[in-house]
Length: 461
Image 1 (cartoon, rainbow, N blue to C red):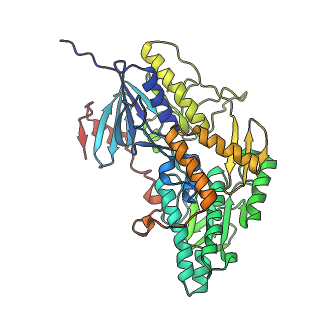
Image 2 (image 1 turned 180 degrees about the vertical axis):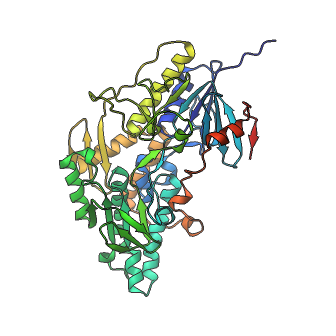
Image 3 (image 1 turned 60 degrees about the vertical axis):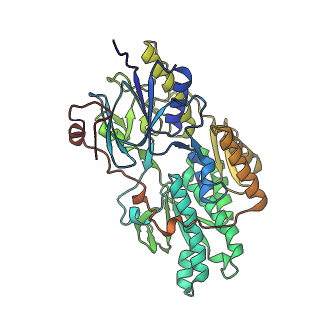
């Protein structure tokens, strides 16, 4: 009897790009056409743009963690772990599972959507003392930490310690940093009313960025409007400034200022997953260089998209333009790359990715927002309606939509109880505890791990 083996499609990463691809593959391929496998540490898709609202307590963590097992067509095999190396010649991906076991996963087609990690620099003390905002756990830890600073300041008899605990520094004037600073400042502004021993004027938020403007993609008018909103709330904005040194109890700015603080939040951009560096292929500013069809030149069956790939932006009349690493592009690229995988499998022509940006939305907490849908500049309540309407509609499941809408309504009516869950009291939660940039295999380690084998059962730990 001849055994017919189905083609193996391996998708790496469960962000917007990876999940969009898997969902479309499940919908358009019959079960006997291909075997679909997804590599991800967690069996949920994180709706990253709403993460600041989890940190500030407006949304619960579960509301933006969209289960991958809710789909009616769900049949994808999920490997709980992270890809740490790919041998393009042997067509094997090495996965480190959540139990630290190494698994050699063979494939016929691979879709690389490993996303990005937080971009850091060689700044003394940064990874040991700064908090990140890239994962659900980091957001939950950060909320606990900020509330604990209010609790500790309220209990302290030392005026210097109290003042230091009530100063907060956010580095990064992009969307993530600006929304994080805005949402957490509102958290402390509302929470301090429950602390009669604390002087509200002692609470100081600093938002700094080396760039000359916040969120330059918004344009000068809306960018200035966002700055004015933040400054009116008391957030001190310093542009053209970064961090020179980070300590456990103070931060030194590059302009010489020393800020006593126990809270440094680092959101100064992202870089492609280190997995891309293990491929030995051409990159563009760290992102894998791919064609407009999102396949890797010279390697049949290899596709890449999202934050980790430099996908040509054919919608722009600009030579060398690539799509920015945004959720809007990643979601749409996921669908197109799935179609191209299917086309390659069936011997049909592939199509290039083309999408014109629909605009930008920035939720600054409370009733404040700025938005630029299809080029129309909005601020205030109209901008807030557009921002939340866009995010709500982009949530993949009706359960998530219901949870998010319920959280928004409940928070608007009842406010927050400012309760700490106790996460951060027992475990460290700094950048070094969430980024594993050195966990990836070198070419020599890849060869030793694969060792000429190609079976998913070949493991070592």
